[in-house]
Figure (spheres, rainbow, N blue to C red):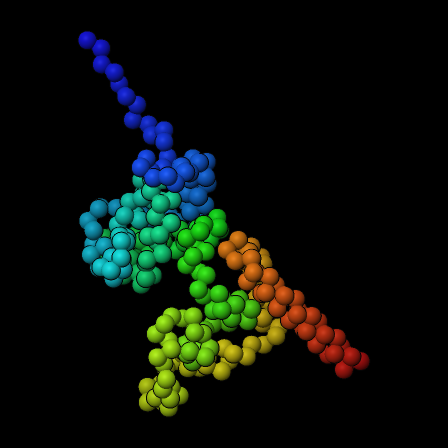
Length: 250
């Protein structure tokens, strides 16, 4: 008696009960190749015992539909469709605290792998990345246009209201209170707002050479246009300053 042997090779890529169109296999392979090509990939992924210690100690796993162990398993088994699905929502729940990396017996860093997946999602202009970053356009404008870090005093309703709804509740004499508890980060409360012109121009070159601006254009074209205009103005200001210095030397 002959038996019909059904192939175990998956021919349909996508959710069979969803109207969402299937993802092209070449696209899935390209996304995984970008993640795997990163120099950090082999350092962050060493194997998996499936013990679940990373998930048990993960703060995000207690509140969201997120599991560090699942991320490691998806990448370790090269589950292309599962990786793509995780990049649509789950990876954005990670708190990037790296508790998982500190506890993993194999020395994996699920948080580091999530970072690679997030960067790849931005590179490919995924809608999930756009949705996550959209509320923080003013923060991105500050960081990229000045090329500087954020300072504690910036988390105020006047500076960055888009930090979240609770920031509006901050109404206290922060400078007076912080004198009782000195913090190293207070050293940046003034310099973070005023950046050396030459430093900004140099960092603009870094943004361009490392592809940061290309990724920004993919995620938010309007913000990209605003930042490039600011960069052009500052570069012109720096060129004018250099000419003034040359004239003074003569």
